[in-house]
Image 1 (cartoon, rainbow, N blue to C red):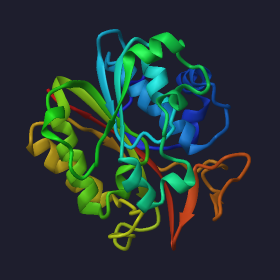
Image 2 (cartoon, helix red, strand yellow; image 1 turned 90 degrees about the horizontal axis):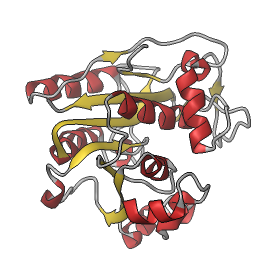
Image 3 (cartoon, helix red, strand yellow; image 1 turned 180 degrees about the vertical axis):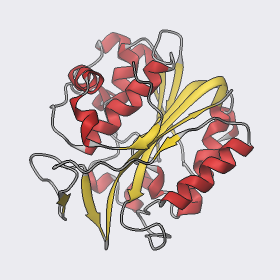
Length: 263
């Protein structure tokens, strides 16, 4: 079995058994949409590292209304779902786009997890990704976020988030995060903006710094050229057949998944 490493979203992954299996568990359609790839990539990476099991503890950042807390609870994990305090989220525009969950039960709206088990295993915490409280350090077997740290305010702020959230892991813990990747340029990009685009040089610097601090990360930057990967979704997006690549400002972007291990 191929073991995942950090990589770009690609068309071939949508034809794998693991992607189909996670979409089935998440009750998501088998569409070639990068959001579903992010869900399945995170779940598969955590599963391969033994994180999705009873008594394991996970911390999710900027959860919004994503279904992963329910999925992980269904596997017996104790999950802390975190996001911005609702007033802060509203000022940033997240509440108005219905991306911030007001009711914990909304995270299990599809019935992915038994309601009683979900209520027992999932809790909610207000956490600013730019100011992770020290009380969360060394508490979790895994952490994750789904296309979130590109909203921290700048490329550097997102990189600092990645460094800081690693402190939340226990020894042997695993972090899996997805973010926006600039396919158009390794020089120009969007920075200091509501949504930033990470270039290869930004990911490389972050990986170098993570390794310097003793963490483990391997990255495959292979770019596919299949028919779906040759198509770019344009604003306002919402293409019914889904998309792997999209236009953000003057750049074409896709998702990159990062898998980082604490020894």
